Amino acid sequence: MNVQQCMKPDAISIGVEATVQEAAHLFVQHHIGTLPVVDGTNHLAGILHLRDLLKLVMPAFVDLLPDFDFVQADFGVYEDAAISAETAVIPIRNLMETAVSVRVGSGLLRAFALIDKHEIYDLPVVDDDGRLVGLASRVDIGTALLARWQQSNPSGASP
Image (cartoon, rainbow, N blue to C red; front, top):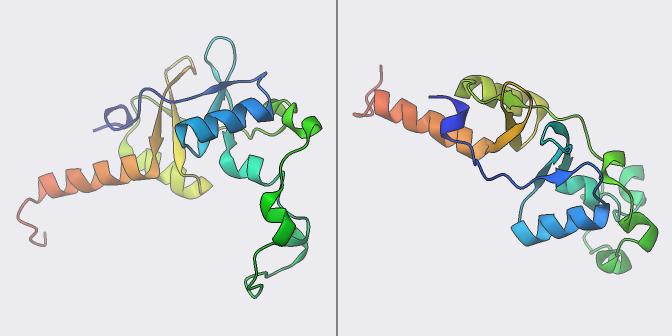
């Protein structure tokens, strides 16, 4: 089994020239946490995570405190913070990260190793030319591996 067999082929992506506001709309509309960023020919150019946008409104003191777990209250007025008009039009190319991706024919263990090493939840899948063809999540890959293990040992007995 390879990653193509468990990926989502209809991955939601965004163009490299899009803005923070456009990215926020896609995150909300599709209830997703990862947006592959593509150029005009659908080649993977980067990756944008939900956390990248949320950090735009995160209070500065969160980064200053080594441990804020002791804070029992909400963050007050920060809870209702919104991005400014200037922030809304920032091109996502200024926020996106270099994408870790896997080729469409790659094995599941290789794909999971990349997800685990880079501490990501979703892995863009590209064709041999680097064009986005899908997205495989940690859950997609992990459950496909577990299903394969169950198929190879259906009785559940130890090898």
